[in-house]
Image (tube, rainbow over all chains, first blue to last red; front, side, top):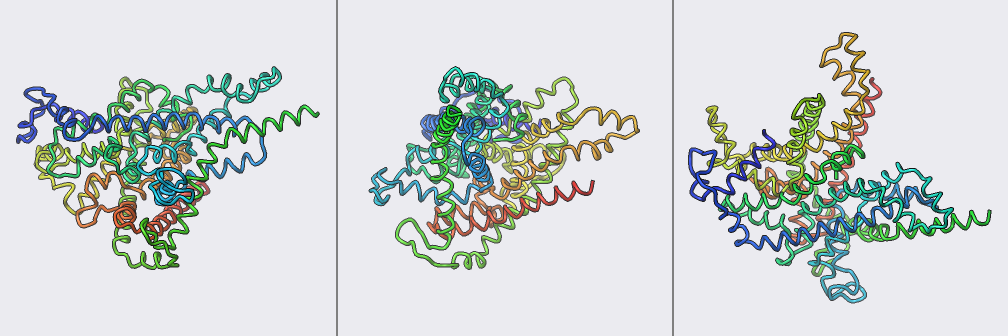
Length: 269
Length: 295
């Protein structure tokens, strides 16, 4: 009950007429249903644009993490090369570094990317990658978590397939792509949800790296909405619900993988 | 023999090739920033003009910064409330839902629902629920004859509200992790305990709790790391008020770094905070080990 009521209540608030929101004593059911608040949410802030920006960022995050995470995870699990285990341990240790330590220097690094965003070769002059979606996509493109997660999965798959294909003369990339990737679908689905959720819900990163109003994400829009203590709660609740819907749909579609994935690694994203 | 070394050389080359993009990104966005953060914490870097080496000035300033100490006190107070409650609630829920009853699946999904929402969306919804006049929480309390406070604007309640909202958001995820852990406890242990006449509490105390130690270790470590870095909810729910009573350290770092552009000083604080996180994680590790030895 406690878990669900807040959602139900915000749903009710979002569809009831304005004059009933501030009626005392509180009434449970609205006397009539209106979509006004949803319309207003999209009119007062460019919610559609924010929605699209968030979707794009989360989607790119998923794409990069699945590709790069599975490539490195596969290499760390199934290929032998000098220094492999040391490199993996260093990558893993990075999971322990709190985000706020790298926050400010990441800002510095992104601002001073050579040749980009009006910068010269020494990284001076322009804004580098700041205010570009790449400022969010690249730092998160191949997280330690993605590599770790995919490695754990590939380790659990047998190596026989690899041996056989090698004898048949397949290259390493073909073995990875044609044999192991199809087997890794459940793990990829789980990692995909984790990554999408993290990207869609992220707040502090976009708050710092994206100042261009046209590049704001839905979480930034929602927070800006909530600042103002004089807000209309109707549109605000409508906005909050809109911000939850994509994740909810994704979760319901892939619920089976999701719970399995958590059970499988014993971790959350 | 020659073909084998050729094969392994090929394999090694492909291995390096596969991890190159990840390593490149890792060096640019993690290794370099960490080294840089360390250097910047000894400078007065402000993005615009200054970038001089100032030695230990930032760290000295930190010692005298009352707000920094207040934020630390706030996050510690938050952690002391949040972490034990988080473990107690998510573990009880997991134990409760472990018994296979009708509707359990529905409850699990419902419990997981808040975890899917962002800190911002959850905080937004709770601003409305905690509204002193028109909010649902005080309305329900008034049915029991209790006049609820102005949750987000009064001194002790603002932080309690944040603890409550973050708990609401996180116990679902930890419940699922505990459920996974419970699945790994062998059933026969409970059966033999029952034969020996152990009651429910005893079998929990002597079988479930020790068996779940690794899970508890994982959950508590993540909770410590997360709690000490609290930002989103405090930012949206209370803006750090009233009177800085819910201002968190990351919030302070954010305002100093990106509001006042005192990046060097903000980095010094970030380092101090990570040191504290490290210490707490180590203490947590130690506590878990010592309890192991006791049994």
